Image (cartoon, rainbow, N blue to C red):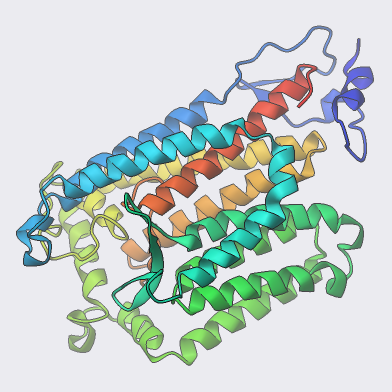
Length: 419
């Protein structure tokens, strides 16, 4: 039976059939599908290269979190902690995250699509609860966490995933009116605006930036008119510019980023950036070796979270940084390919979700590495899959599990099955 005869029958509930297999831009195991499928395609159930790259980043992150945090108990502020405190907590977070990812993989994409609006509502409720005294936990003037005993949960991480699913579902539902600005864009802008107000109340401008980029990316990939997209982008840029302009401490961060060595900023807002640059300078080409970092010895604040890449640069040099960047680039490229593959199979929601995850991972990685290198102003965003932080690790792995599920369903459909 030819692919032309078989493919249209595969998609339950699809709006239109895919005309021919040679129109599908998909490759399996590095080989293109034949134009006519006379026999079912044999393929593995999972995208194992993607799984192993993610595992490699997780393991590298575990090692570097231990290296970056091992000396922290020497600081009186952390004197009651053991030298393995952060390592143990990070391992616990990884175990919880892996379990959550396995559960997430079992959920079909039709269920994610069905419950996307409800997950968005739950994330809004949690963002409101974190602002309630005696529920939300404040650290360094920011109230972003809800204590759960074994870990502190950060609702903004769930909000990234929830907005991603909601935006993809929204674009599928609004596909017929995507050319009309008020009917297609304004409701989504209103939803993201509510999330933004709650995040800025914490405050967490970094998470709001990531969520805005995710929503804009999905709107663009979903087919929103180009003029509308650039209008939205201009509004977002102006809005964030206004936030910086009317906030003194945000303006100070910008000034410190422009001249971190200035006496006015070197011991204040520019302190982290200046010591991050020193760490990269010490690492040179091959680094000083694992465990040999000097900057992590109470010079570089947040070395195990936001500035983990600086410790990698110091201990493994340019080579180590390039290896990490290469793994992220490959992973993001593969995620985007899975999204394109799903859209080619007429699974728009799944394709937009996969590409949304790619935008999320790519943008946050770009911001974190840019901040560490002094190319961007300091912003409190962790390095995906690697930095210390339970909520981020859990949500990153759930998002990757959903992408692997999308790829799995694509493979099932292409060999003649149903999902």
